[in-house]
Image 1 (tube, rainbow, N blue to C red):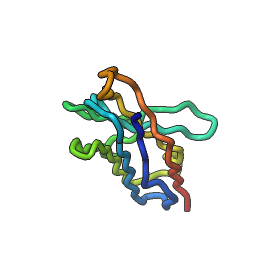
Image 2: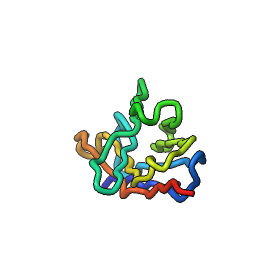
Image 3: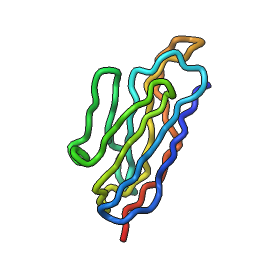
Image 4: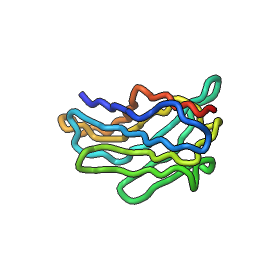
Length: 120
């Protein structure tokens, strides 16, 4: 069984910073990619940033403000969010594309989500 657990959300003023963490645990053989998505009320879930073994990719609306990084030894992905805006308010979800150790099947996993609220 594989589990993704996020942490680091909260309430911050505009212009502030937050750092999200997501740790993958369980029967993991390998991780192809990890990423962050977000969903604001009444909106579709959208990609924020993805990191693979070779590259990183960002949505245009976070370029220059957010940085995704990964600790392969801990199966953990981070999202450093700076210069936060009210429109960044959303539930942020961690995602991992990984192969399970027992079956070697590649599957898509999601965390439970962490609320990020930007407000003065």
